Length: 77
Picture 1 (cartoon, rainbow, N blue to C red):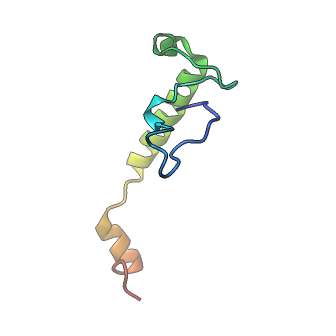
Picture 2: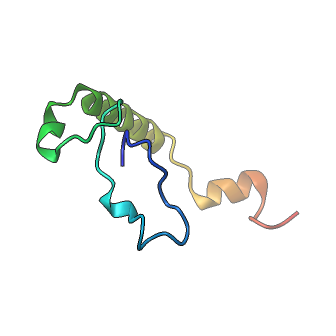
């Protein structure tokens, strides 16, 4: 739940504190209806950041073979 300041993913509290019921919230912790999200400046900024990071990550995509060649097999010394 973006912006919500209440604790999330508390072990053993699913019946009392269901994580899927936390609302999307603004920076002040106020619930934001889903219908208002497309008009959210903050959401657009975050989407641009994630889109940029994803493009950077795919440009520098490494494979398991690349990792093995440079560092040896995982778990080997």
